[in-house]
Each structure stands twice: as C-alpha cells, then as structure tokens.
Length: 187
Image (cartoon, rainbow, N blue to C red):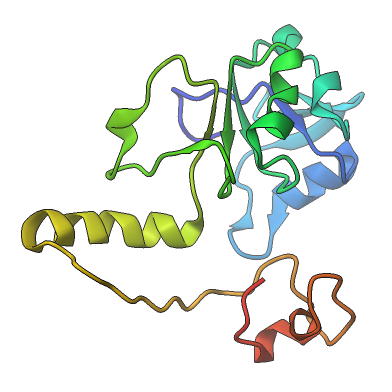
C-alpha cells in the first residue's frame, strides 16, 4: 500500500468477510493502527481511496484475477503450496503465482541468494520459508568467502497463528497442542 510501484487490485480470503478484513487491516496488534483510510463498499475494500476487489473463494480457480488486472498473485493461505494446487490461480487469469511458504515441488528463490536463476517462463515459484530467508543470505556470503563444508543452525522462532495460546488438541501432533508461549516446538 505504501509503495507506488506495487498496486494491490484484489484480495481473496476464503476465511473472512470484507468488513472483518477491513477491521483487521485497520487495527493490527503487531504493526499498530493503519494510518490510511479503509472502508467497505459493497463487497470490496476501499484503501486510501483505491478500490480493492475482495473475494472469499475457497477454490482459487473461481477467482476472476484477469478481470481485476492482477498479474502476480501471492498465495499466502498456506493451503495451496504445491505447483498443482497453486496452478488453480492461473485458471482465473493470473500470470504468475508466488507461494509465500516452502513448496514440495515449486522452484524456490531467495533474494540475494539465487534470484538470478529465475527464468521468465516459470509461472509458479516459492519464496521459501522465513527461516530460509534469514539463514540463506548469510550462509551464501560465508560459503562464497570461506566455503562451508558442514553446518548446524538453531532457530528461535516466534509462535505462529496455527499454534495454541492455551493447551488444546492438535490434529498435527500431541506436542503441537501445548500452549505456544511455553512450547519450543515450532508449528
């Protein structure tokens, strides 16, 4: 929103409706209150006077990205992390999809490490994990200058939205159901 060279024209969130999205954008516990204007007009958001189409589709193939002028899609639901699943966005007219998580099969790029290997014919890429984005640039510099033969790293990660704030059942594993603030097991 704050960068003039990037224009957000549409958002799809299959989990919430536009009024709640506007509220969440306006009041963020981590980043503070949004300094611009946010309102809802029909089923769309209006951010700083610019209309942003808002969709609530569970199937990305049903999102009319072409109609909105969207070219690049950021797939950040955590649900469509394989090339096959993310490809559904292309059916709606998107040209490129960036998966904001590690992918089992999509080409993975980290800025400062291997972004020059990107070829324009690749339609779906992954931006890797937050840990990879922190470690890989430093490891590249170290390897390029000193050669890393073997390595070990430890990550201290804040808890995530999928972790429990109080103990509760976890479909993933028993330990994952423990309270996040007292659990060093990542999600």
